[in-house]
Structure formats: C-alpha cells, structure tokens
Amino acid sequence: MIQRRFSSPSQQAEEINLSPLIDMVFILLIFFIVTTVFVEETGVEVNKPEAASAVDLEQQSILIALTPQGEVVYGGRDIGVNGVRGLVQRLVRDTPDIPVILQADKAVTTERLVRVIDEAKLGGANVVNISTVN
Image (cartoon, rainbow, N blue to C red; front, side, top):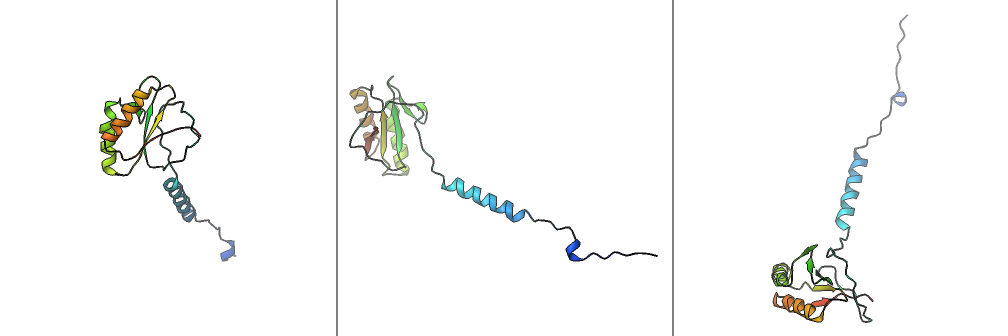
C-alpha cells in the first residue's frame, strides 16, 4: 500500500519576514543621525573667565579659541591673529548674521584679545562675543 501524506496549511513551516524589520531599523537610524545636535568645539582647552551676566548663545556660530601661549585656534589648528579676518570673511559670506564667539583663556592679554576682536570685525562680523563660565 502506498500512503500519501497531505499537509495542511497549519503544518507547514512558518517563516518570519525580516525585511520590514530591517527597513524600520534603518529608518530609525537615519532619523537619529539627522536629528542629532553636533556640538562644535575649537579643539583646545581654555580656562574661561567667570561672568555673572553670561547667557547662552545660538548653536550656529564661529568659535575661535585664544590659548595662554598666544595661539589663535579654529577647528583644531592655529590660524594666528592674521588668519582671523580671512576666516571670518569666508564664513560670513555664507551666513551674514553668524556671530563670532571667542573662547579666550584667563591668561590671554587684553592686547591680544582686542587684536582678534578687531580682525573679526574687519572680516565682516556683526556680533563678536566672549565666552565665559557662569
């Protein structure tokens, strides 16, 4: 005798389709990457002075650091006082109302700070702020 087996739909092996799950994971990954706030840093550590009237400024800004050794740093590299004007001109051309924020160490001389502020103003910056600790 020949026996035949008929399988019913409930006896068939069930598989889980992972394609929608993978798609959802990639969509979430893209969402978190796009909505992440990137904090821009100057690349050097400075000891900022304290100020009672300090306020938070907007995220979009030009950050320039002044170290106690006399370096003027933007994006982790020393641009010098003479490089500030060209840098500000280039960045202000793209977004005219972008503020310049100077992160000056406590030990920076007033003369050096004033020279950098002057160069930023001559480069076209409308607003130049000094970063402090509150």
